[in-house]
Image (cartoon, rainbow, N blue to C red; front, side):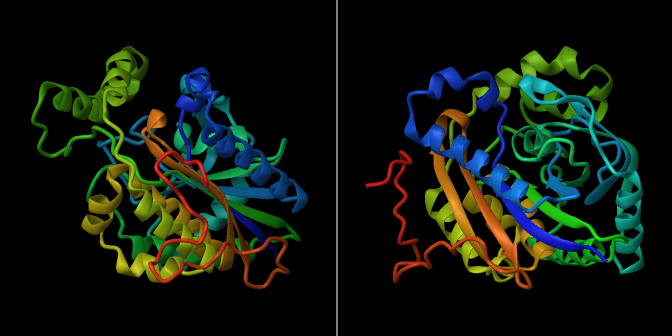
Amino acid sequence: MSRVVLGVGASHTTLMNTRWHDVEHLGRAHRFRNALSQARGRLEQESPDLVLIIGSNHFRGIGLDLMPAFTVGVGEVIAAGEHGTPTGPQRTDPAAALALCEDLIENGLDMAFSAELLIDHGISHAIQYLVPTSVPVVAIVVNCFAPPLPTPARTCAFGQALGAAARRLPGDRNVAVIGTGGLSHALPFPDWAAPESDDDRFLVDSWRHGKADWAGNEERRRRIILSAPPAINTDFDAEFLNAVAAGEHAALAHRLGNRDLVAAAGNGGNEIRSWIAMCAAVGATAGEVLAYSPMPEWLTGMAVATVTPADAAPTTHPAPRSGPTGQPHQTIDPTGERP
């Protein structure tokens, strides 16, 4: 039987690759990037034989022609390579991926699978910055952008089932789990069922039919996204990271409805589903927040955290519990600089 040894939650952005020069002078940008390296180091210390990456897909590989709630890549996993992220086939373990998918289905999860899964930075950013060299991955895509979405509570249940399936993998393997995405941010993604503006219709059409010519549409799509104003809710991000640090992800998931989540964290905040599933898969009872950096330059509240399974000896110290106001003792201000 296998064991789950560590979980990592991390935000992602291609702007870290393409516009680093714009933020290189900011301590909060370095704090986030350094925390990615720190998390990678902790993963290397655990010597994983397999890394499960739970993330989103920004309509590049999975479109409106068919939008499952949860999809496992059971064959080739091909990275799109947009904006400096990895490109081409990635190192995977198809036998393990298929075993996980079969186990999940046998235990009540109606999974989708792909034998040729195209991923974007929603998963490949984690491969680029977190996964130790030569360790195979299993890519798992959660629908975070095309409502109706799986609820946070359902995503938590999925994560618990995934963790159980990982522990039942044959062999004596160390399995790590990464959840990538979030935290609070708002993307100019319209309601796909009721687009209003010309840009809305362009985006929805690209989600329906644009996979064959994604490169041809990318310039306009990128312009639309980068024109969006930042919408970062540091209070929500602090509350969420407190829950991760305290092992209270399940309670938070059951409190948050889909509409509540978007109202508090923006539609990009829907990606915290990946963190919730990761924490549930690990069986986390404690975690450590390595960095939180509100980055309006990247439109997003950026964070990195590690969590340990309940049955593992702790190798890190939990982050401080919240004080009487419900905010963490570690102060977070809008610039990301600590007093």
